[in-house]
Length: 404
Image 1 (cartoon, rainbow, N blue to C red):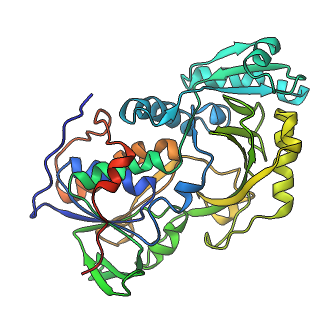
Image 2 (image 1 turned 60 degrees about the vertical axis):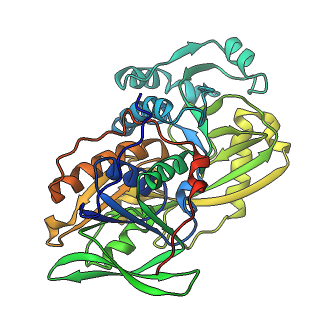
C-alpha cells in the first residue's frame, strides 16, 4: 500500500473544474490530483449533503444485483474489496445475510446462488438455525440464508477521505458556491458562472475542462451547455428506528423491493427503501405511506421493527441511468454508471459522470479520469487503487476557500 504524499500539481498543469461535491466529485478530485492535474471543485451546499450523505451507509457486496444487474454486481464486489484496503477503519466489516422468509423468496434461491458464483461474490450458505444463531432477532420463519461480504459505512465520513486527500494534494474545494450557468464559447465549455451563497459574491471559474459530477442534478447542469444526460432521478424513503437489532446487514432474498434492507448504524437500524421517479431532484418529500411500508416490510425480516420508536425518516434521489419512458418506479433501471464525453454531441471540454453507487465512487472516478486525461493529453496512470486515503478528520485540517 502507498501511504506517502504525492506532489502537488504545478501551476501550469491542466486545470479541471468539477461541479459537485459528493462522493463521485471527491473521488474524481483525488484521482486527478494524483495524476498531476490542477483541480477546482464547487459544491452548492455542504460537501456530501446531497445524495451522498443520505443513503443507507451500505458497503455493497454486489449480491443485491447478482441476479438482475450483473454489471453492477461485479462493479460493487471489486470496489468493496478495494475500498477496504484504501480506506482502512472506515467500515464495519460485519458481512450481510440474504434471507428467504417465504416460499416466493425460496424460488429465487438457486438463481441468487448462481448469480453470486458468476459474479465471483464470496458467499456461504446457512441453515435457518445457523442464521438465527448469528442474528437472534431474525424472523424465526426464515427458510434459508446466504452470508455475503456486505458492510456498513458512515455515508459522509468515507467520502470525506477522498476530499481530504485531494485537498492535501492541492485541490481547491469550495462549498456553498453554486453553478448558475456554464461558460460556452465557440461550442466549447470554458468554465462556470458561479454565486457564493455565503459571501454573496458572483464570479467566474475558468478551466481547461469541466466535469459535471452532480448525480441526480446532472441533467440540469448539462442543459446549461445545451447537452443531454439520460438520467432519471429516483427518490426513496429511508427510516431509522431506535435500537441496533442486528449486527449484520439483512436483505430479503427476492427481486429488489420496498423495505427489504436493514442496515445497522451505531445504535440504530436503517430500513429502506421505497422507489419512485421525479423530474426535479430538489422536489422530494417523505410520504407517510412510504414510512409505514418501511415498518411493515422491515418487520418481515425482524419482527421487533414493528414496534420500534422512530428516530428519523428522510428521502434521497438516486441518479439512475435511463430515459423517462423506461423508468417506471426506478427499480427497472441499472445501478451502473456512465461517463459521457459531450464532444460526441459537438460540445467540447465537457464531461459528465453519473449513475453508480457510493460503493463504486472510486471506480467511477477512475473511468472518468481516464477520459479527462485523454482529452487533456495527460499520460499518467490511475494510482487510486493502491493509494491509502487520509482519514476523514484530515478534511478539517485546512479551511475551505471562498470566491475572491
